[in-house]
Length: 74
Image 1 (cartoon, one colour):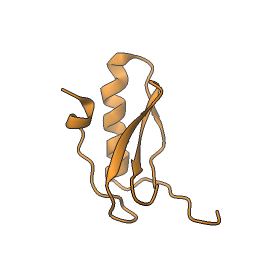
Image 2 (cartoon, one colour):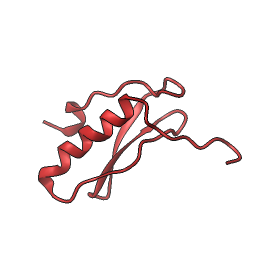
Image 3 (tube, rainbow, N blue to C red):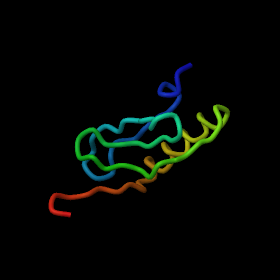
């Protein structure tokens, strides 16, 4: 089963937009809002066995609202 199918994301805590789970070059996961650009910190993994757990941690951080967003002019 694909990791994206195993992860449930809530709407963006800033704007209510959809979150997108992204993998960065095979070393970390983060979640980004497709509407406003808010995102979580990167959750790193070193081995393939840690990959799913890192994705779940990124989703948890997103779902509890621990995200950052840069506004225009910052």
